Length: 151
Image (cartoon, rainbow, N blue to C red):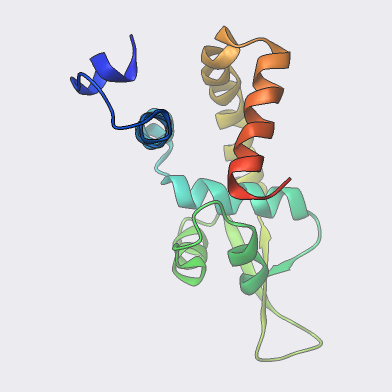
């Protein structure tokens, strides 16, 4: 299937216009698939992103502002997401010893266990992308970096 078939559009103004539409459509497709994977675990994409950031930081704590900087969705409210993870006992908050106004967040064992369960499904899901070779995947990633000016 091509983007033309998927969205039932015969043509685009330019190759760049086609690329932009295809990129946005593919992003939405990937996000929808990821949401389906996470739904049985009671997590949103943004909560999953925060948990993965916390796991990457573990055992060291991280401040909410630093979580915000590292999130994939820069429009997400990291404080609200952390509150949701606290309520689910997937993270815990502690007062920062150096700055009492700042809050440190760390993933809990329950959060680590949940991510470990999700990892099995995530690896299976990622196999769908193996229609591209390692070289093609690396090239696509490099092209996306170039597009964002992040080379």
